[in-house]
Image (cartoon, rainbow, N blue to C red):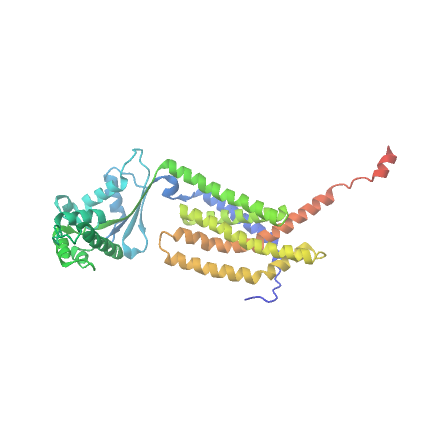
Length: 402
């Protein structure tokens, strides 16, 4: 499929303008990173990241006050995912005390403030307890009277039903009341009756808790940076070897640095959290961008072999136009996928899809307007440098002068 059968667009006519615009964007990215900084995630800073779901619309200020009253530092309290899900994301810095259960302390503080009746109640909070505790409680009370029946194993029978209850809770976000839990499919009437008599549904549930130590965070940050740098170096060596020219390899790596730095600056401006998933997105972007660049470079190499008398800038322009259909089709289809992933992939993949969505745009731009023109700029510089050097004197004249 070809969108442009005989494209003849003068991309190189504005190469100096495009290079100037790219330099301006990189400087703007550097200013944004220097002034606003990067929103490093818990993977790189260390600390705790906890997500809670609430039965009613939560008040961020109230939650902050509750957690801080338990003598816990809070970095941020913000709404998470879609508003109708009533979810809150808490970020807490790493505590100096080793082995501290930060999520347990936060949960205890929220329970004391939002569900004080749970302190004096022996009922099991279905929104705060997992499958193992539910199974242990059911085995102990044995609502189906399975003990003593040779063909029934209470742990297996109650484990199956407890798994169905927890899965039903995950589907609904949390149980609004005990009756909703008792309506779980695949549980027996005896277990449903037991739930109504021995359990409760608190006003919130713990959805996710992640804790990373400060040393681990620093190590991950260094390794993420080195991963990007090594990928640049590997691309430089590979392209320089494949095309037998330092100009091709250097131009490709400059374009990769250009793509990575501008995208990182955009992440700083929009406050995108830099996590391990986002670092993976940057590495994916590097691979995608260099693949697009190599396709154009490969066509330049083919045309150099068949059109030896044609000027380099004419060959480069011809090669860009010949690969334009492939570039546009590939970039557009990939862009559509990442846009869908951004809107439909959920909060976990939001940063990953954001980097790829913007990166595909800037990567396609750099392959056409930066990488290929830089090859010409490099070769023109080499030609001018060679022309400016004085020619060596002929051997006969030198001997005569002596």
